[in-house]
Image (cartoon, rainbow, N blue to C red; front, side, top):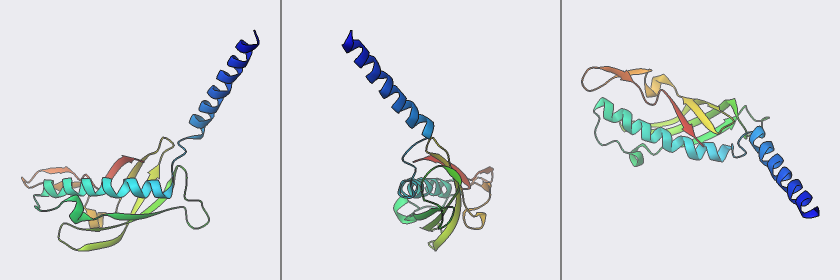
Length: 147
């Protein structure tokens, strides 16, 4: 009978630990994780945008996106979910001009997904005109991703 009690207690303890982890949200929401996820997602979508616009020769390596993120300023730890992440993106645009520190506002959810929006002056408006003259959604205006 004693092994059953020990096994039951062990199962309950493991279950409580898993439930506590799930309730606390995703434990891997960090500055480094967001930076690692955001830059390649942006670069891939920027290449997609170039294709929509009919601009040849734009690839992920030519975009060369890098980012530096901060959550809520110097007095807030750069971890956890929240709507107060700011990421400064540097990349080469579709005209070969280096864009340094384009400000992206990022909302990170507890499930480690995010929504990022950048400056329309640099990346365009919500809709863009494709190479056939149709108005289509701009893939880099606002985009989702996962850490």
